Image 1 (tube, rainbow, N blue to C red):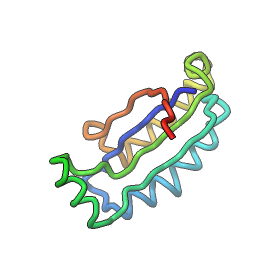
Image 2 (image 1 turned 120 degrees about the vertical axis):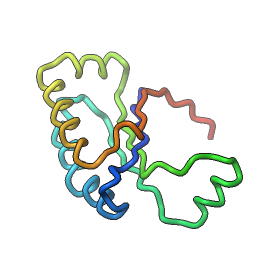
Image 3 (image 1 turned 180 degrees about the vertical axis):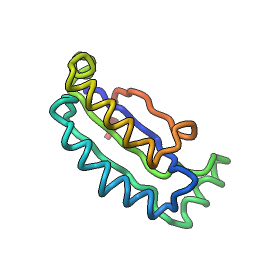
Amino acid sequence: MIKLVYAIRRRADLTPAAFRERWRAEHAPLVARFATAMRARRYVQSHTLDSPWNATLQASRGSAPPFDGITEVWWDSDADFQAALATPEGQEAGRALLQDERDFIDFAGSSLFLTEEHAIF
């Protein structure tokens, strides 16, 4: 399987709570609606916790502030991912999701990339 990982920062005009609600309540159902067209196997949102431990973890590594959340989308193979992009339905799904994301994601502050998992335990 391959996985798209999308490390997301919210738009500056949204509070963390408003961002999380918009992402979960509005965007997630849109992704689910397009799952078949995208040939996606699994979709998960990980929302960053409002926890004092985040500051401790950042300080221990000298890292940047956390993203507001992570999206992960799985496909059975790179061929399935590419096939979905090649269909009119998959292309329409991509356009619709991009348009929706403009309402709550800071694209310049976010990052997305394809990965391959290597389970250790």
